[in-house]
Length: 205
Image 1 (cartoon, rainbow, N blue to C red):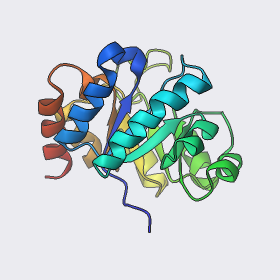
Image 2 (image 1 turned 90 degrees about the vertical axis):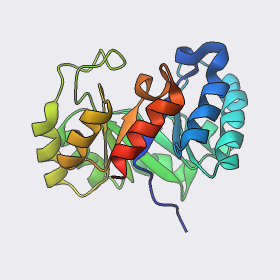
Image 3 (image 1 turned 180 degrees about the vertical axis):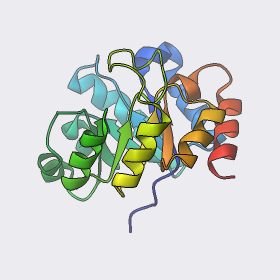
């Protein structure tokens, strides 16, 4: 039986964390994160497999879900819980032929993207950027809460709000209909355990 999706997705990129990458993931998991998206676009498949296997082992130790960004082959090789597809990338049904019964998520940047991912059978989507964010600079202007609300009303698929999220904005996103929130620097920057504690308090209050 598949575990329910946690409300907080931490997007972990070793390009952001350098030598402290695995330490930061372990701290985040220890603080309560139960969904890690491993994103390492600058690494080749062999490097992703080696590092991804370590991330998968950490997630398993804490009973957390691990999803691999983009690479279905790596997701399968490290026995991840799923794969997260880039927008306009591999179709959902093609990904499922590789990862079989595991989670398939899709990056979306508009209401129409979300509707298409839902129709294609994705398990969840990220919608970004909801607010201005340094980690999502190339996807046009911020969508805002109104578009998030309209999108959530138009589709039943779980939506993770992404881009410029902090604890206050996380609550605003939930109120607008988001299932949860996804963050990169918002989790791993600064005091990781305190950041996670604040976010989880909001998401489960």
